[in-house]
Each structure stands twice: as C-alpha cells, then as structure tokens.
Length: 363
Image 1 (cartoon, rainbow, N blue to C red):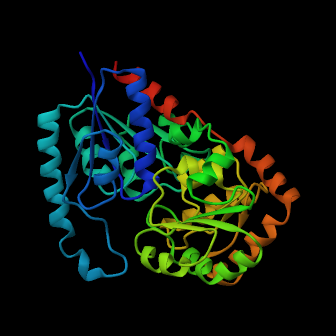
Image 2 (tube, rainbow, N blue to C red):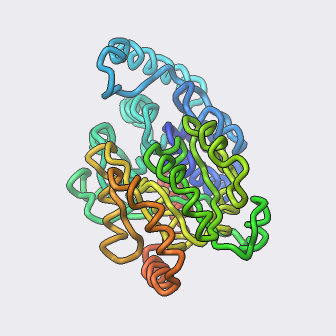
C-alpha cells in the first residue's frame, strides 16, 4: 500500500527548496509514495511547489509581526483556523508521516501529527533552532539538522546530522561556464559576479550594488543580479543602458547562475551557505542582521572562521561590498584559497539521507 506523507513549511526559498529536494528524493526511492505539501496562503510556496510538480494546500496563517504589533491582533484566530484546516486535510489525506521544514505552516501540521501519534520529522536548517521547532522537537520521531552542536535545542537521541538538502539540479549541474554565461546574454571573457539576496531580496546588498554599478563597469566586471520583488523595478531602471548587467527579481535556473559565477555575493541563510559549499565558488557573505537570534551571522562566521568565505556586516555593505568584490575579482590566489577551504564543508546527498531515514521508519 502506498505511503502518504505531508511536507509542511515555506515562506522563503530557504525552506521551500530543501522541502522540494526531500520530496524528489522520496519519489526517486519510492515512486509509489503520495506527497502533499501544506503551506501558507500568499507565500512563495503556493507558486514554487506546483512549479516543481507537487500538489499544495494553503493555510490561513501568518507569523508574528515584529515591526507592527497592531498587525498581530488577528493572529490567535488565524492560528485556531489553521488547526481546523489542518484537521480537514489530515482526515481527507490520511498521512502516515509529516515532515516540517520550518515556516508558519510547519507548526499546526506537526502538532496535529504528534497528537494523533503519526510519525513526525523535523528538518532544522539553521545553526540556531526557532522556538516552534524546539517545542515540536520534544515529540518528533527524528530531527534532521545541518551541523553538530544542536543538543542545546533538541533531545540528543532524536538528532541526526545530515547537512542541508540542496536541489539536485544544482548538485548534479553539468553546465560549463561559457554556456551558463551565454544563457544570461553575457560575455564569457569577463569576470562575472552573481549577487543574490535570498529569494525575497536584500535591501542593503541591492543598494550597495546599485551605487557600485559604475565601479563594476570601470573594472570590466559583469553582473548577474537577483534583486527580489521589492527592488526589481529600481534595479532594472539602474541597469538600463549598461552592458554586462543581467537583472531579474528571481532566478529560476540557479544552476546556470552558479555555473556562470566567478564570485558570489549572498545573504547567509542556511540554504545559501549549503549551495555555496556545493558549487564551491568564492563568496562574500552579508548576513541579514534581523534574523532570529542573529543566526545568519553565526552561519557566515562558520565559513569565515575557516577562511572559506569573506564576511561583511550589513551596516558596512554600502561602503565596502562592491570594493571587496572588485579586489577579490583581481586576486585569483585568494579565490583559490576560499574554494579549497569550502570543499570539506560540501554535502551533496542530504536529501537522500533524509528520505532514506523517513522511508525506513514508516515502512
């Protein structure tokens, strides 16, 4: 009889793409398995999951708004409503297991699975576990984590260190640099910088890139620039008439972007770090300073301390980011050093490890 699994979570690419990677690995190992995603209405997953070929149900749920407390008034009602919606989904789909990857919708789904005695699995991608994952971890079947030292958040006997699942099209990309650069309409003879601020964009990175466009041009550097939605219009306007700048709010084919890049500028989310380690490209990390418990700085330090990436604090991005990129582009020895130190940190099969363990437990 086919096993049925719910995969819950989302909100950002850092939650959605590992979830899709796990789903793909489950399908590969057991083609009969039935998968259903559960996400938050209006969030990225409602678009990205169907694009990957999976069915998704949306919940009326939102997270705590730290910037505007008045917007949290309806939060308890949304949470209660989402529990009723999850109950209906469970009654209809009858899952054998639930996997939570982080994001608003993880909590009600995993909570109900645990109440009903259904196998529940957590994937914690960051080096600092959020409060809801810590609560769910107490009754979880297995907790998959990216790195050592997570015993301070979860029961030691439930932890399995797997690394972070990276999309297989990135892990197994066989695209040569020239083909990838031509995909973006750029010149293979010029050094290429890839700037990504996470799936939703990064204001400080975008503003630094925008003001640094003349400096990049002066140094014969070209740019693949993922702006995120909020900065897309402004980014496109700034790049108008400039040769050697490709700009878009979102890059769907990241395997081409990574293959084209000589240097990467990125936020320091767990998935961005995992992908940089897998593709082994010299990177400049600008951690988002308002992430919970400042976990992006912890993520970035993990690489910077091993001399596997450069790190620039968010508040310094305006003055230092583009200049640092230019000087790194002119220093092939430093680039080589960073890449060599990235190699031992690369994990390319976390999705398969997670899928194998889940299927072993529920079969």
